[in-house]
Length: 356
Length: 38
Image (tube, rainbow over all chains, first blue to last red; front, side):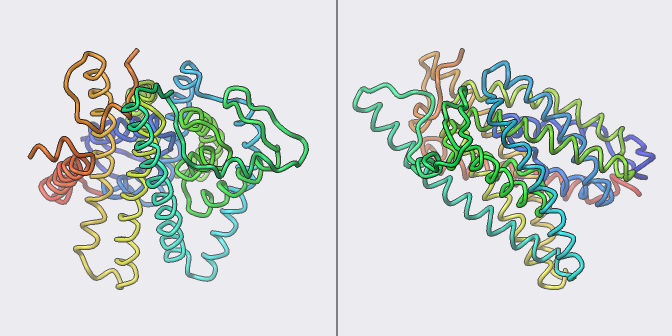
């Protein structure tokens, strides 16, 4: 047990380290900050709400730096895309925060936030899941026909529409192999930033599918590039929260210790899987977060009287971190086994690449 | 039982059950008790 003086609570150190580790693995793998998981978890551990949010923002910024360094080494960052998007993202976040403050004044912020989260995340889950299933099937068919398939395969054609918009200046993203109007990238940055700012999260779970399906970047590049965005937006959030006295640095320190190891593992794990595997994990993360938000929404709408709903929401928050972490670890294990010629479940080979 | 490993949906359900069960157990047996104090 450790006495967190600033937060004013006692909590076991290893629980924070473990939380940092699991969210680090997930964040490094699918390119999300994990704010939608960590903040509720910290509240369950006994941290006050405002402190949970501050600790979360600060640890996300630190973790994103670690993941970004690793993804840079793996060649997964397109700097042109990241730097073009960052201005739009910051503007979008600011607009989102102002919109949030407006709904707060109207007294409907809580319900609107949860309802928006449920709709946005469920839509993203459906699209990602359906598209990834199609891609999975195509890889299986290619393997049966004896054709080799690269690390990435997408069936969505939405990006063709956005890449054809002839608005100058046009940016050439060499690493992502995308040529697209700068305004498209900036507008997508504003839209995803607005949602992120309004929902009070880093926005990785919105930005990664946007980069994949709207810009046309590969999943690996989208994950790495999104983490650079999180360094900037998370860093800004951490600074603002620290200045407001919402951060217990000891709690951040313990979480960062776990996150450092987890983020390294999650980032390296991307080298063992194909793009659809990352998109599968992203969609699982989305449906679990949607279910958790749905439970909380029903709890709020029913006057916070049904204790079972509150209990289920807590279990979902803790359980989803564990589930995603276990799934990622098992994919890496299956990938290694596949390379060694050992038996793996039949659905695994199309999702993994030979371990390096 | 084999279905839980050989089918992706089965594997998903198996991991989800393990994770949610562990989370529920940790919460009920430990977190909900006086492990934390304000």
